[in-house]
Length: 135
Length: 308
Image 1 (cartoon, helix red, strand yellow):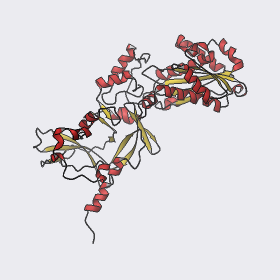
Image 2 (spheres, rainbow over the protein chains, first blue to last red; image 1 turned 180 degrees about the vertical axis):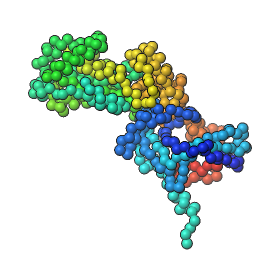
Image 3 (tube, rainbow over the protein chains, first blue to last red; image 1 turned 90 degrees about the horizontal axis):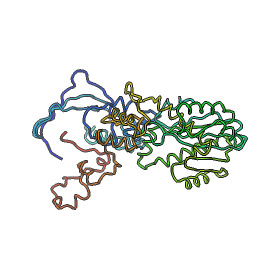
Image 4 (cartoon, one colour; image 1 turned 45 degrees about the vertical axis):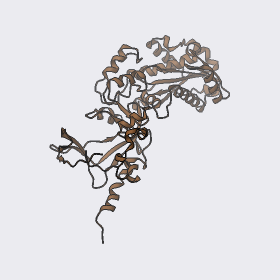
């Protein structure tokens, strides 16, 4: 873990901020850029009761929608200029915002033990630990 | 043959069936099983059963049904028409295994191979006939695998039914030929009118036979290769033809159950593999973090972040 003291500047979105669907995939895709998500993925998603199903690269996925914790907003950031060294400040711009996302498991039905579901416990706990104490 | 239920959702497996003739519920019946579209990299695999009273075997023969592979598409359509006209004593049922079902089964964490899938589908169809009240006494099955073991398996599952499993049964027994015609007609119609769930605009339907060695199929697979998603669900991702093309022309995707070398996987994820603890350079404790985060955080894969 590097300990950088340089600044990260977050710029507001250009024009109206965009809300886009966000999917958390159970695999690592060696790709950083645009993809035809609505054409291939969203178009083939099936909604059954509390479970969504889809397939990616021939593998069956099951997922569900998850809201961001209360008071939090998800941000998709894009780097404006890639810095030449890690000493330079970095500038990112908000490309879109989200308050819910769909996370996917490989074959396993979504459940309350899923890492991402449990991770959402933290803000409430953090508030209890670090928040101001009432007398 | 109404393919509507399958067209409505062609990502899953679907059963289609004729009305069950009354005579099949009162008289001893024979039943044939065959499949269509096992080899192609495109489209579904269709399993078919056809059944009629044993006493009507000769009538079935007179319809001049033959192995579907020796017939042209028009001949098959005509013969299916004849089978349909004989609905007072001939019944059929089909199980359409969508290409997506084939891909996701074969690529499952606990692999479910095509032979097991085939056997289970055939068994499911025979059970369907029995559950519908068909008085089965004889079953004839076409097979690609070892016939004897399969015959034994089916005989055990369906006591009281005489099971005959033969390679090329579709050219030996008219009731199997009839099943092969039903299956092949359904597969041809489904492939021809494939309803792409993906939003790909006008899709070139000149995909040839769907067999991997067909130049038209090859050209189609090259044309419709997406760098991220690979292929539409019309393609069987579990076929080596599709895998090879994706390996060379699409971005790499890693799954947690990949057969990847542990050391390599750890390197990619920037973790330390077990082996690194044995190497000379890592002996010093300069890499040990000041404190280990609590399990609460590691369980949730939460990390405190001070850089992007």
